[in-house]
Image (cartoon, rainbow over all chains, first blue to last red; front, side, top):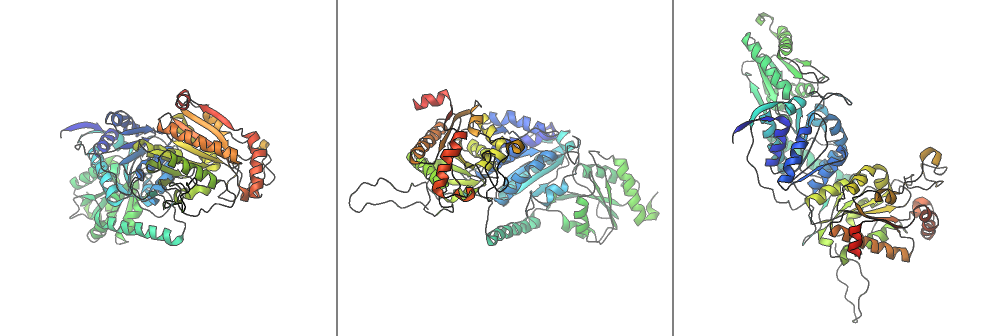
Amino acid sequence: MAREMLKGNVAIAEAALRAGLEAYFGYPITPQTELLEHLSREMPRMGRVFLQAESEVAAVNMVYGAASAGVRVMSSSSSPGVSLMQEGLSYIAGSNLPCVLVDIMRGGPGLGNILPSQGDYFQMTRSAGHGDYRPIVLAPASVQEAIDFTVLAFDLAEKYRHLVYVLADGQVGQMMEPAELPPHQPIKERPDWALTGAKGRDKNIVSSIYLKAEEMEQYNIMIQERLEVIKASEQRWVEHETEDASLLVVGFGTAGRIAYSAVEAARAKGLKVGLLRPQTLFPFPEDRLSELADSIQAVLVVEMNAGQMLEDVRLSVGGQVPVDFYGRMGGTVPMPDEILDAIERTYAKISPREIA
Amino acid sequence: MIAPPVISPNGMEVVYTRPQALSSVDTHYCPGCTHGVAHRLLAEALDELGLRERTILVAPVGCSVFAYNYFEVDACEAAHGRAPAMATGVKRVNPESVVVTYQGDGDLAAIGTAEIVHAAARGENITTIFINNAIYGMTGGQMAPTTLPGQRTTSSPDGRDVELVGYPIRMSEMLATLPGAAYVVRRSLHDVSNIRKAKKAILTALKVQLNGLGFSMVELLSSCPTNWGVTPDRALKWIEENMVPYYPLGDYKISDAVNEMKG
């Protein structure tokens, strides 16, 4: 298929449609509203279900209903709206249902602003609302990745009967880039556990309640065992020039993409710098980072927050090398030269003689 | 488990049996709780209309949180108050199904007011059974939006003070103002005559859904002897003497299309 200029939000919506999205329930919130608007036109045209709910609370519960019926269903929102969805997401997680959520992060906390941010990393990677659960989290840094990860999200959700988040920031949602959309997939058949009416079979029940501690613990053990399989099989990342690097820069999404420009500039100055950009934030590419800790001398984490993925990086390198941090908050998007300054500051601490 | 068929030993006609839609299990409800009656009426209605295999029940958070154990239908457990939203998702992707929410007064009239209002406003083709017993049963008897003025509960120990917390909400009257609401009625379970009328209303509500005529709701004045602190038969009298005057029984919304369907 040909490449075309696509806005991130629209590309994600169209990718979901082509992945066989049967139902979308959402609510307007900047900077992701174009996703809802695109589906408001296209879903009815394709005979699928679209509904703008009265709130994000209602939207996530409509998603919960459709997910219980076994269809490919999605919602999308931004930071304050995602906070409203936490209850519903926990219920989805506790009901063993596949589901996809797109979060286009904005400045916070609170009402914040509509600018790009990565301030919800903790919220999105640590749990799905209350309870012991880790959603799979995919972090695109381009419109093409946003498309590819949306399709992947549905496949992973179904493969594991799990919640999958596509976690982007307002920049990925709003920017326009050339990208290629996938072909249309057919609508999937309903799984045998789905709620479709108990015709000719025993009734199906979808619930997240387990009053007995032993049963609740068994459910949790099942989830934890699944997470181990996910960790072993689904880590994704990209690396640039890490083979001979003394300093490793780590960033995800837009921050990782901008950091790449800074890494290139540092290399041009003769500094041995590399980049690792996680594409899955859960499962985090901890194994590769741990491996790289043997050959590098320091890490610089770059984020559009106060230091959240920073903690996962520190856990992964296990104290083997110092980990520095450079972050901007409040919807501020860093420029390559300020990241280059941070690279040079960290680099000066490990190899003073190599700074020009 | 579906109850096995009843075979009469000496050729007599079987006139009363457990509905297929009502599971062959003991419920956990208190002695004298009218949930048992409401469950039975719904199950009978589903059987009479042949809907058991098409029905998907959305259970609330409240005493009837385990309603899905008592009906032989596909079912799901909604978050507190969110059943109408969950039902919307279920019905819209299963348009041929019959979707019923079964909700208490905390679920529907407190935390879930937005969801029920908007499901009714959209004219969602779902049916809501609203159990109004003027109290929060499952959590041990706190004040509900439907608790009557002066009524003592564990969180209004001196009786509901309308100066402080306002008057109870009449949900049927309120929802009836919405164009999408096609059939909104209030009935009661306090005696046999009213139970029969309640059964008819539930049948009509399900037919409204079958005909795609919009949102249907049957509010059922119900008892909670345990948390009201009275005997079961005194509780039924309490409904008649105290609840019916504040929550008048009757038909609050019957759309033209529903009138045509009935006529």
